[in-house]
Image 1 (cartoon, one colour):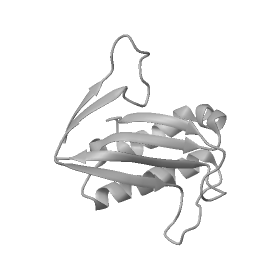
Image 2 (spheres, rainbow, N blue to C red):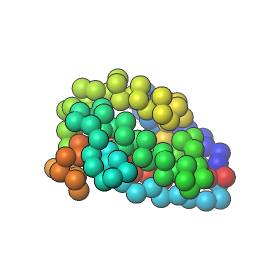
Image 3 (cartoon, rainbow, N blue to C red):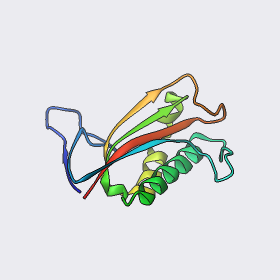
Length: 132
């Protein structure tokens, strides 16, 4: 995939995301929502950062299985039951993202929700990628 990350000067400078991603490739991979589930189906971690790390690792594992890498991500949506907690941990979550996915940020959104499918889940990530 080739990806052009577009961050217009008239918008607030992005931190940890891109305002727009123009992706050119031949395959689109739609990634299902991933929470902090382990292989046995149980939630891993009690804190939002712990769960974010596992959910992101799960999302990237699904992407790798489809033949992609984190650089192929065009869009990621983060759903959280605790927007204030997410904002409070932004720096830590950014470091987790960089360690697992690098610095090629997709277009992103964070959405507050009342609850997720698993009642213990604090965060869920979904998205799509464009592969070469």
